Image (cartoon, rainbow, N blue to C red; front, top):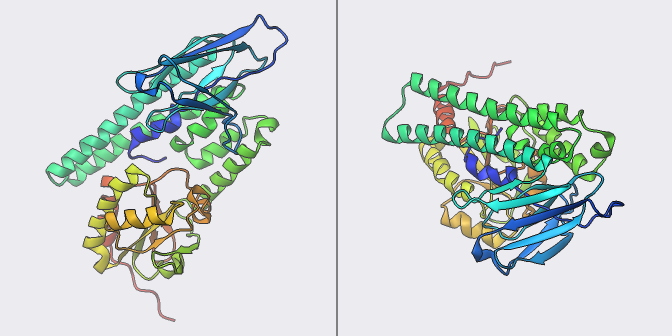
Length: 385
């Protein structure tokens, strides 16, 4: 499970919203969806998507007027979920299409979509409220650790206590998401949460969860892509050998990870992109580690998930990235990203001199502690003969 920055992941959790035009034999059974949005979004176009399809093509659209939009339609015999998006600077909202007067209001402080008005929507909102609270608590632990580290060096006991508290909080989030998916396996909440909550659950546990779903779900294109991704994550988990992949460097020459792994004691692999704010905040931490430990045997290789070379090169220069980089400029479809099952960035791995992945999904204070520990460790010489 990724850990930092937690709140930015809420977009994957509290995402998505719906509407749709479904035929139903009983026209008296209707659903109504009323969405209240901040005034500045008046005139914006809302685009609607089917989250169970992998093509990410909009199904329909409509304009926002008078701070809201409202839809009425016949209730489907089988509830379903849709995604609606009207701006990049505000979270979408998920709701289930089923009989009821469904209301969606954006919280004025957190800008979270609050959904209610039908059984499944109420269930989903209750879960989201609990999840949000736990994520806030975990973020507070991270903030507290960062503050302590800024003020003074933590003692080994303080570090251990802090890590234990963070791991306990992350385990509680994983348990919450796992149980929600398993409990709702027979309705669309469980199916959509299987995708949106994956960042909180161990990949092996996710595969176990998939056995709870019926064949119709498991035969969808979206599920097959998800399964491939999970298997890639599992094959590149801690303890596995790294996968050698290639891309272009900033000089437009083809290079591979094998050009760096084994040449130094340790290599940090950093998946990033110029459009990612969390990635921007991670780069200075990496620069600090590079300046301190590169001469002592640490290498960093950043792998960009950009799709535009100018954006990538401009950001690299602005962020003073002086270590090697690779990219194929294909975003999340980059074969490097697929080989490692990357679904969220930044993502960092540490590979030792033997090509074994010894850490994954750590950053901030944890990354600093891990590198401090590793660089202080004396690698035994290889046996002769």
